Image (cartoon, rainbow, N blue to C red; front, side, top):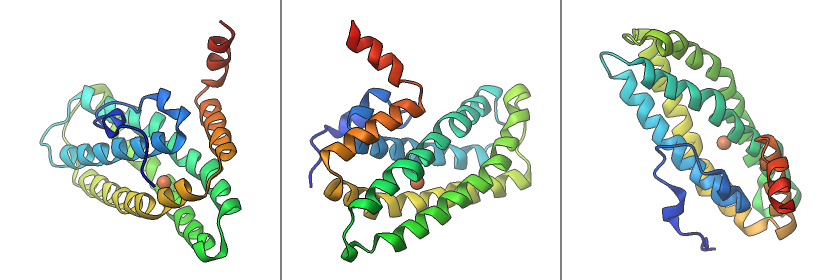
Amino acid sequence: MISRTDPARRGDGLSPTDPRLIGDPLEFIAADHLRIRAMCGELDRLAGAAHVTADEAAAMLSFLTEELPLLVADEDEDLLPLLMRRSTPEDDMPRLKVRLDQEHARINANLPEVIDSFETLAETGGAISDLMVYRLGDFAGQIRRHLILENAVMLPFARLRLTRSDLETLTRRMLARRGLDRMMERDDAQ
Ligand SMILES: [Fe+2]
């Protein structure tokens, strides 16, 4: 199934994904995956840098604390449950869901130590320790492998199986998660 959205709208991954894309929630998630992949590249770059500035560390910290947990929650709490409901037995969705749940749990378990690594650097800048080089490389690799599975299997199944009403539910839930639902209601009322 070909997306109707121009891939150029997905952006370059250099800034947070445009929330206006949430009207097409699977397109937003695909764009967010590009953003996450770009930030994995930035994690690798910082891990190899002799010195990290406070601004670079603060930008990474903001991604790790504000953007990444929202996407994991979009998938865990909304997309995957909808997909489970709509999938057919031959989709083998329960097995995929177990694997994605495990990967999300591992990302969530490793996230605090990666955040912790950047907290001091975001104030003062500085050198990256050997422990941090290992942590960042491991975390970026883990996320990249996860995105490959989601882009190759989860998103194509979602495009195939979710109904228009499911997509509307997904949009509503993702807007609410970002505190944007009331803002949209105000816009509608004007
Ligand atoms: Fe995910």
